[in-house]
Image (cartoon, rainbow, N blue to C red; front, side, top):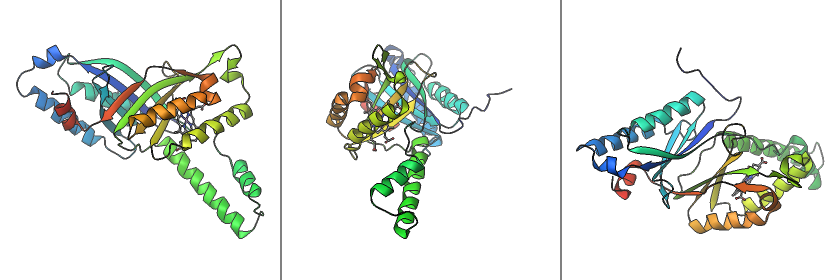
Length: 270
Ligand code: 76R
């Protein structure tokens, strides 16, 4: 029968994985096993190194919630699963213990810019329908939106020094129930959120993946950064934004450094 092909109607699967290394088992490995593990992992990363997917990226966790962290990007569910299992199979039996995992999918924001939004924007700029300037700007706007949607669904995340991950949900309690707000209210709030986010262009590159009905939280937040303070500043500033202040609920935070496998071996003295 084999593994069924399970594609999304649009977008790709993303899996975050965190593992601790059992040092007692690792130290008892036969000579050469560590090197063989590294070589297997390198080959797996090389085989899954497309700009968007399939892609396997390697990290070390800082702080001790895990030793190793990985992100798998793959179009198909069976492919995510195959890379996940192949990754674990690189390591000698018993040396890896999973400490956390999160499965999610890329998505278009519900509050995406529509053709009407574009047109309203052009009119607000004083452009007249049918003029050359209007048509040029409309085409540019459409192209920008198409590019934006393409990369939201097929992200090409940069290999910056830091990868931070945390899961989050929108609150559903008493008067603070995100899901009881009407669409326009949510769209307005999310525009405020995006305005804060955009201030961090160049310092933070974000990937928001949806997990409602798939994992224990509603979204995975992946933030690439060059500096730790950029993470602290963006998350702090967003806490004052109504979307996070009233409606944000957060899971555990994982701060990780991007390292290629050979550098991981050296850094962790494997
Ligand atoms: O996709 C976009 O860039 C458009 C605007 C946008 C949306 C729709 C956007 C911008 N976000 C969107 C959706 Mn976001 N984001 C978070 C967090 O710590 C916290 O308080 C929250 C965690 C951060 C740090 C962050 C950063 N965002 C979402 C959603 C889905 C909500 C829904 O659909 O209801 C969540 C859960 C979420 C959470 N956001 C940005 C950023 C940044 C940096 C931006 C600007 C990106 C850019 O313009 O390049």
